[in-house]
Amino acid sequence: MYSISDLDVAKACETPYEFEVKDDDTGKGTGIFLSVIGGHAQVIADFIAKKLNERRTAEAMAEKRDPRGKRPHVFQVEEDIEYNIEQIALRVVGWRGISDPYSHAAAVKLCTINPSIKDQVLAVSEDLKKYPTRFSTSSASSSGNQPG
Image 1 (cartoon, one colour):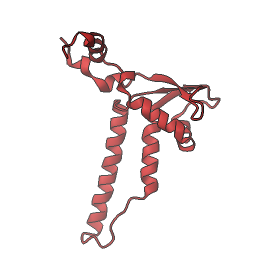
Image 2 (cartoon, helix red, strand yellow):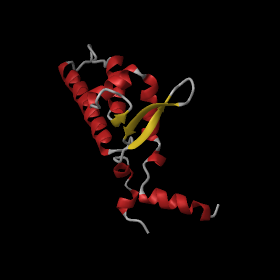
Image 3 (cartoon, helix red, strand yellow):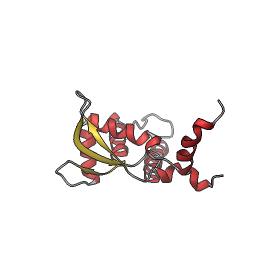
Image 4 (tube, helix red, strand yellow):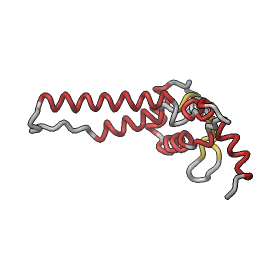
């Protein structure tokens, strides 16, 4: 039997998972290790909610200023790109193998200048097998006994 806390994916995603960045050409490790939280961590959910609330507020204010919609407020593509990079960089919480000290601003820069690393961070942070709950670890160990 499981408790609700055994099923808490968001809590499991708060525990960083360290992975080695792979070289795109060779597939070999680069010696750069990033510590990444999962995409369902509360800090990620809070960031997404905050940004969506800001966007909705801006849209509502634009509509209020121009109720007939003659000058619609349009969000620029650059804003979407910045949002995407920011929410992926937020998942990086530390590193080894990079001489610059870790900071969130440095993680944003890393994800901005290196799309491959950004993509690897996103892939790892969305892989829930890297952030197991008590439920997922015990169900995986007993899955061989399931009828099927």
